Length: 399
Ligand SMILES: [Zn+2]
Ligand SMILES: [Zn+2]
Image 1 (cartoon, rainbow, N blue to C red):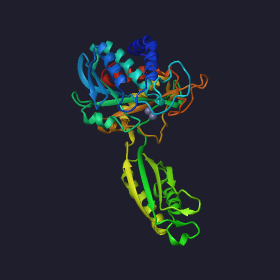
Image 2: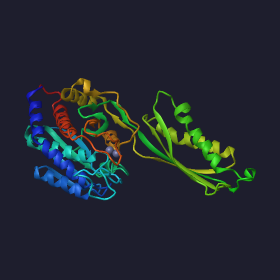
Image 3: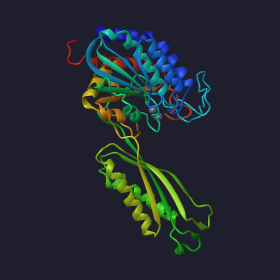
Image 4: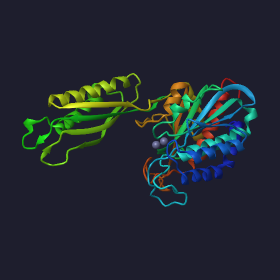
């Protein structure tokens, strides 16, 4: 380990207690998408206290901080998301949510605490930095998305960002394990909504009207041909119908059935073909039974695709910090993340920070009303990001 890394470890160890306190404060005060007012105020105040330049109100509640290095060089950005979820927290811990029906159930409280910790460590050593560090605190990751509006509001410009990094708490991994992978890490998330219409009639006289319920059954079954037949089976795709509504009485054929679902995919070349696949499969099934339909297809976040060179930077740092055998290079999920928008603008890498601890009973999944993580993950995340900045800005320089 170089002297520089030992210094980083010492600096992070020094703020360990503060990271936990900050995280618990944020956890007790969760805020929903674009309503992260208290969180943003806290972030801005903490950054100002460190002497970091701050822009507030970037895409409503977003905050951008800039640590100017003492020497000229590239601009590296770090991103944390700030929003919570509409969930009633079940566990009665001292730092539980004080806002009814809102909960930090994904770990974004940890992301904010970590990035504030990084700001503290880096602000102290600003004059030795060859380049600058932009700290992006974004709203509304869970939905409808704060990354894209922040980019539109200029978060990656003035000064222009050369590379971006970020992390997500990852409950599938124990604390001390990291997920680092080049290429697609998270999926593109799309939504389809279908309404099937028919005349409706008596359950005993099905020949007098198309049956929208049978049409919906055929259509939903047909959709499974997307992952199993229409797409290369070596290419991960999932199609799940999560909602279906239709009918009131057991002996009446209704005149309408609605269903909606999600399709997840990694390959940006495959994605534009998906709406037509859905339309054709649903259309054939519905029309064969004489019913009509309408469909809406909405593309949400694109796939989160890590740049290979930038992922090498993260990988090297990860192996140095937690040991090579604690770096998982196979991790991939069909979940979505709007970090993807940043990664589509500038090269960068997003990685997973293990935060599970079976012994402490911290193993409820993300978005569960019992979700919590091992706070030992906070210093690991903090040290990772500081070292990634050092490694990126120090590239091409003799150590
Ligand atoms: Zn989430
Ligand atoms: Zn999340």
